[in-house]
Picture 1 (cartoon, rainbow, N blue to C red):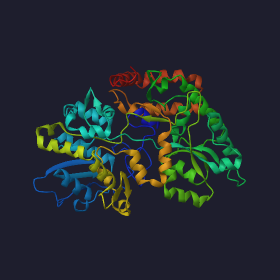
Picture 2 (cartoon, rainbow, N blue to C red):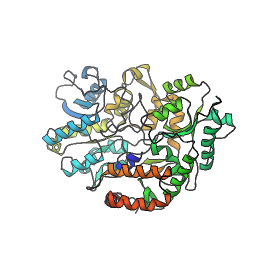
Picture 3 (cartoon, rainbow, N blue to C red):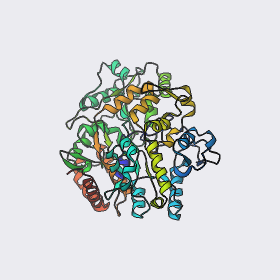
Length: 521
């Protein structure tokens, strides 16, 4: 989460625009984001391309589209391609790359050689800026009247995410919803006669009790109170002090603030240090990668975990939990209250799980350009959106009034349809249809109060190395919370950051970009 914050392209707690096999984390299908879309059932390790024989009608306009993804069927088995081609008279030629790095390399080669795709996924905000600066992208601002269905689907506010210099250069996917919350072992609470903690002091006491009072009843001191992955674990603690995660921008009391300069940040760090000083926090918390924190929760080693709802509530994980301990009862926990309020971590208003651009060269081919607009509008309309979410009506789903009812074939055949969700999907309705047994967990995570951060809108200025800044901030924060450096030295840390990391340039550029979008004014 710290890395995402500093890189200003990810979003803490943002959700997936993918689907089911791993519906776990903010799944940016863009290259540079390690989280695969959750629809991606498996990484096939190679580009999957459409071939001839798609059945497109004579006179159909061929559209060349590239993006990241996997498990795309051949055209003769790709019922989504066939349905779209029939609906808007196209011959879609979609190429997907399982590796984000491969995609980025292929895209750069094609853009540099002038072999432009007709529609393509932009890997990240930095790539968007690069292509805009090179004059390679079509300015969509004059064409917005031709993209009315798209605008209505994603919302006018979403277009700020792909706006540079006042002009729109890509279509961002529809907004996501948050997935992460604290989860806590209710059976451990019951065993120790405790209630779910509602304040940060209660949270500290419960965390400590879970580590010291043998909540699993095995007579050994072998449990930990809290686990998670790096600084993201403490997102609700930062929120309890009204502070965003490290190096996030937000509006507070009408003013634009970076969390590193928020006076309450020192208090938040001091409380996290107090929490760690109990000895009840996972000693490997800063080393946990991937789903190591999930494994510790499932194995019964920890009583509280900061995690997304799919990775603890999906059927395969609940089965694993029951095998370890049939009495284990994990429940979601509302964020604990603190002196700065009650916020379950931040949620990035500028975050998007994907953005798609059109090359400027395509303005010379009016017919093809209009077909790209037709495609974007179609997958944003009622029929097209249902198609790319759920498959073929009457085969993969049925409608009972406005309610989508999946058939057995949806799970068997429609696992790739997310590849055609070029403008995203209505996330809440989609997830509750696809994951009906987890509906209450989805609703809970989405309903928690969160600090609206703005990092997704930012592009890094020249001369600023986000990787260096990320590493330095993380190293220094670790020293603060583990008592290696006194929190009284926080101001000195900021001075070093500004002096050695060109951070002042980053702050000035970021502030201007956000003010230009109307934030903090």
